[in-house]
Length: 224
Image 1 (cartoon, rainbow, N blue to C red):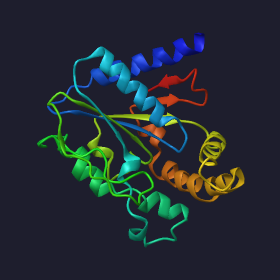
Image 2: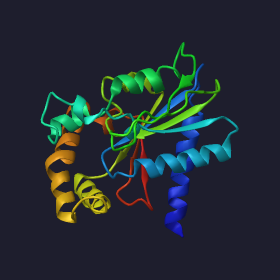
Image 3: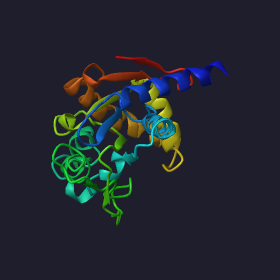
């Protein structure tokens, strides 16, 4: 199908951009974006394309596995947009256990996850040693926050309108929430307002190196 070829071409272009980045340490690629933008799927596919084009080690990490335990989020009400934006992710652990070891002067000994995505279950993830020419593909929300932004060697932002975030996200999360209406309410009152804080403060689409417009996943559009 034509749409399949369009997505394949975009993935190949993204892979070329990744492979063009030269560093004296593993290359750290952020696949950033709001909820339900298609970050994880894109990151998985990009990693597969890279593995088919290079013999370099490709590391996949999902930043949802670096959330802070709920009991440590005490500055804002737990279900508030502010708590979601400012408190959910353990940026210190993302830096210390994933990004800094793979960066300049790092020992390349990294951890790809510390908790289940529910933020409750602690994972006993082994410490691994990356090869000097490894490529990290990490996806998640808020990856261009000031606490993390300088640790990436390439930033890809996956953009969709907030109307799409609501539709996709609520339909996806309704599988584990009491109802579709409950999922929609959670997006309207917590996730989307929190992500709007990020967009207004950081302007991630403008600061990223590459933007993938992913409202139609079959026909994404890549821009700089």
